[in-house]
Image 1: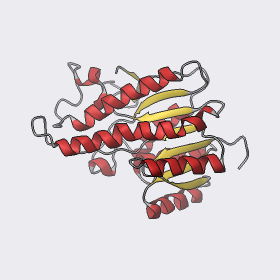
Image 2: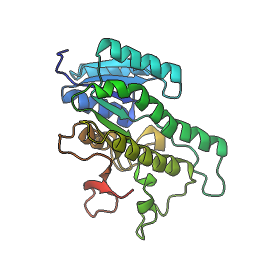
Image 3: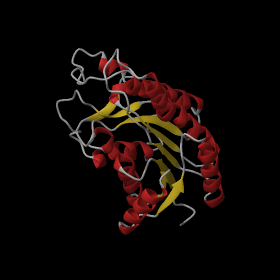
Image 4: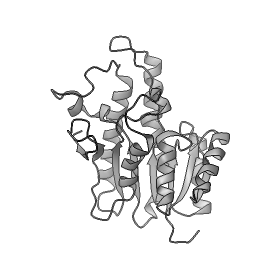
Length: 252
């Protein structure tokens, strides 16, 4: 690996959108750290990526465990000395029973994984991101976390029965994104939230109309923003647009 090669970490990279994000970043020439807590699946993902010519390396990390996260950051510091892109992709979706039937234990678990753990990982890697000439942080969110979208008269999700856990976690993640962007304003770093759109993944039983690769292209875009790119926005697929391939900034 050349000292000029960018290093990217994608959490939850052993499958779905995370795997495709790692693949696309690797095809752009980055060294990709396949963040996963499952060693076997991580090894399989690494092998598949290497077969496509990607410089992929498994990084053991359980984002819900502080000791694991610190160990992962220490390993990256030892091997690379910096991190150029962090894609906080790992997340869960529980609690779709509908409002009034929320499982509060599941609610707590979703918030821990989708919000608290993102802060845990970002804080642990922030010193390494600051050493990059132009760090990019991408928090994989959802249009379901956009209050503006869910309260829009033409809400594209009005017929989807859900409780508050997943949307609330993504709304909180959007705020976390805005706060990191504010904290890093004036530096070369950029922090944004990605809306991949409704993609076919294990999380939803592969019911989404968009492919995992299509969803990953949103994170790819934000992880490779030029110097004049935005920071502190929710960007990605626009479900309300007439053209299904329309992308842009969504209202929080």
